[in-house]
Length: 198
Image (tube, one colour):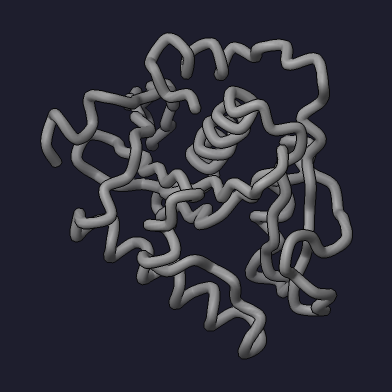
């Protein structure tokens, strides 16, 4: 991972990890993801495989690498040192609407705030783009319930299919009203200071 490739954009989030008899601290950095990095490619392949294995055929809508390279998609990777722990993306529509895509955290980093940090980063970036709504599609099977709980925790509520999606019992659709005040959150202010804005 080159310094040049990751110096442009980063958000540091302090995570407190409790191990037996010891309290450790690590710094997680969220940067624009490099879709040519083998570590990123491997995690995305794992994400696609998991998504397709835990839903009905034809109901998995996770983006592949080609889809993440589209001009209207912004992709991030979260790192603890040289270890990749999560990915996430934002797909922009023609209007003031965006979609959360490719949210995936490695098993060893789950339940430690990693997914929340990535989601907060995407929400803050969406606000900086002037979006008024952020939506998502995820699976409805048991495998996806922790993800649905995470989205609810951050204010997402169930909604009807949006964009090109159609009603599907294997899918759950959720949306977040970003509001009209555009009052900057602390996460957004950090993004502005670090340059990770539209």
